[in-house]
Image 1 (cartoon, rainbow, N blue to C red):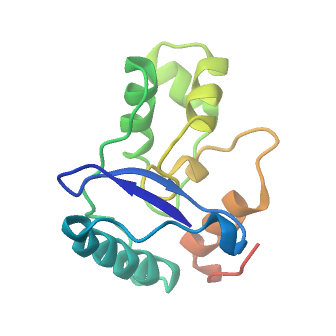
Image 2: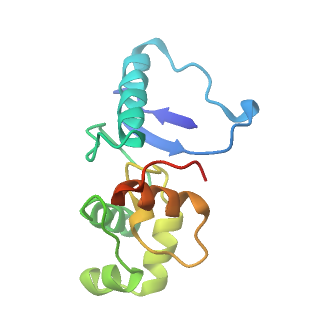
Image 3: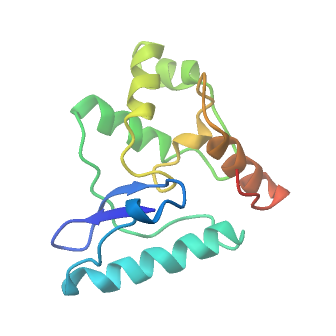
Amino acid sequence: MRAAFDGRGRLRELAVEGLDPRKTSPLPPKEQREAKRFLDRQLEAYLAGTLRTFTIPVDPQGSALELRVWDTVRTIPYGQSRQPSDLAAWLSLEEDLIIMACAANPIALLVPTHRVLLPGEGPLARALRDLETGMGWRRP
């Protein structure tokens, strides 16, 4: 997992990757270490099935359209999913724009694009939906 915070401790990027030690985050600056510890505790609780709503402050970087889509994605309730066409209708956007914005999500899990059923999605999205529907965490 790689996490990037701004100077105020707001999460800007969270990338979930394989266990390749060459891709781990360097130790964050001293002022950001508490934010990282808080993030780690919340991720552990989420994967244990005891946390449904993250309270980590986030500051994703993207276009105005992407931010609008990500804000909408964050309103999808835990354990539920939506089709890209649903979001497209709600936001009066083309479905392809929804799919591209979800694919560009820089904060995996906290901006829960796994709740949007995307074509060609990987096993992580399915594993996260399984977790949220009570099947427990199974590493993809």
